[in-house]
Image (cartoon, rainbow, N blue to C red; front, side, top):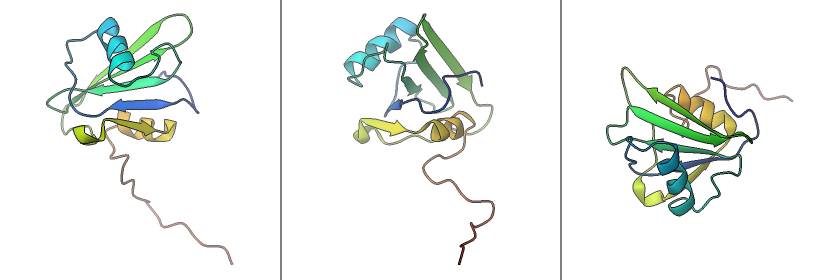
Length: 115
């Protein structure tokens, strides 16, 4: 994915977002619902009712970028609406974008302990 890079702040709008919203509507949601400046170079993530669609909104300094993904199978893992806003790392965002459950990543092999 062409994206904002490492070290970016990521905010998830917990619950359901109307996927008909475009850049203007999502920027307003970032401001009013998430209480964040949409032009802060953070990434704002929104998920639809069915859970198979996600939109990411990002200000790159010149304008807004809107990323939209629809999964063919499965659903994007998402916190409950009661959580309000969740904050992710850029690594967790990469897992989310791939449809991996970023809340419980599994090691392919257990890390070795030194000593």
